[in-house]
Length: 84
Image 1 (cartoon, one colour):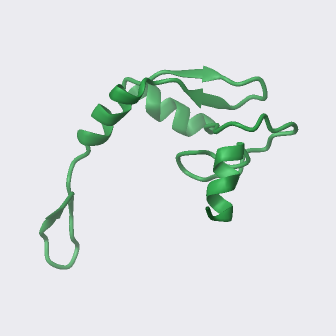
Image 2 (spheres, rainbow, N blue to C red):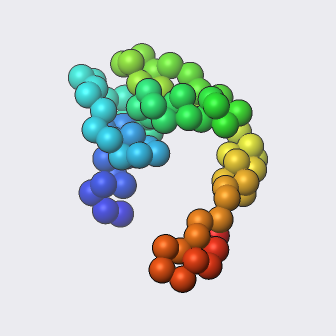
């Protein structure tokens, strides 16, 4: 795995957006920044507060898969065709 992926899995970087999490004692599990935690809650997911001020995604995998499937296609700026 790459360094960035390792840092996300260890909790040094947010598992969704990759922003650096200012953690004093990293717990060794993926964590979320406050903005990504809010976004997950707005999308119907669930999060819980980690002991160091960050958040953990506790949404069951099936619900997360449903959220990912509902993403709207993006239009290409050059050809105007939709991309998944």
